[in-house]
Length: 489
Image (cartoon, rainbow, N blue to C red):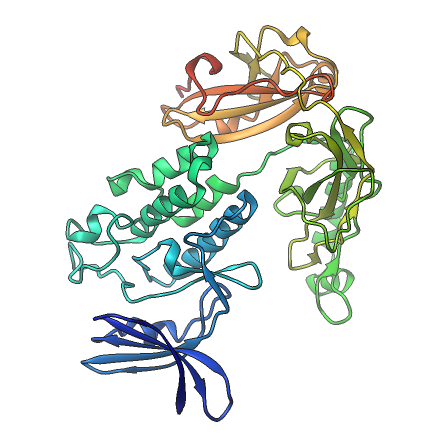
């Protein structure tokens, strides 16, 4: 291919970067001329990922490597002021592309904000693979020491061979820089700390673990007679040939069928609890799943789902079951007085079903910006009961009677290393109705050999205009933890 130079973008003793135009097609590209041999670009040319620039052409010689790659319109994220939502979106994108690269045996080795372009579609593109390499089993350390000081971990400077944990370290440093003061929030601080351990064995071992740590979802367990319906569907599916099942699920074009939107999304009176009709076909792995967005408006005029920017969005999932509705407290998201709306859609599995359209709730008028917090749960303790089939585990607290029936309790379980294990949300009303002495925790989360576990609880107000959620400091201090429970087989 022949190219004409449009503009010199970068030049130093190692690289010359031009914006060029392909003469035949008129396509705009980047031309990267690197001093030395960089065979990694020939390998990358075989792979495509939506968060990486496409590699169109690579010419490798002993003295110069020339790379023609996709032109990405946008700016690097270093120096940009991004909202928390944008930051989390960037983290998700980087996790996604690194998981892809690591799956191909490629380590980037130069993760930093200046190598991340925020493109016009709102997603990140990871660029500059000059330091990238593929680990070799017969080497104890890297033979080529590249990377950026301040972002690169010790092993990248000759102490040992780099692997996936090298990129995880640099990603942690990048997050600390980009998140600024927000990096001190407990949920982020503990993740960044583990990413940036000097000992690689103490870091997360995979990017998937990092992604799960950032984006673990609140799990609301819902149960009821739908279990019978699910079992009947299972029997029906097993008895019916697979091809026939697909005919009943897929559209005529063979594409996933859009799920039905959750019915009647609304606020449960003045409780700050979001309610919508359950969609049993949503989710995967035996759990229903939903995406929600929260909007704050200065007046009661509803937001435009196509144009308005939401204040917060997240995913909710729960164990399959049905009270015919799915409900979850959102009062903790109310920070500023105004009118709050939520929009919700059912999440498909991407194979048989695609996501439903979003549907909008009614308005909740929040005036409790200066309301006092609920009392914090006190006297936290484990209660263990020997059931007929298995041991039952409950998290309890002594001031249970201080709360209203529709107040919710969010319990977080941590292991002996301080790592998040799981969380679950229950209302006081539900706990009383089921006759539990507290919130029941499924035993599979608490039975690691020689494991130790403790929990924290935060109370969510069902009267957000009178009370806010109870205080749970970041980082959580000792007085807010339960005693340890030690599992001994």
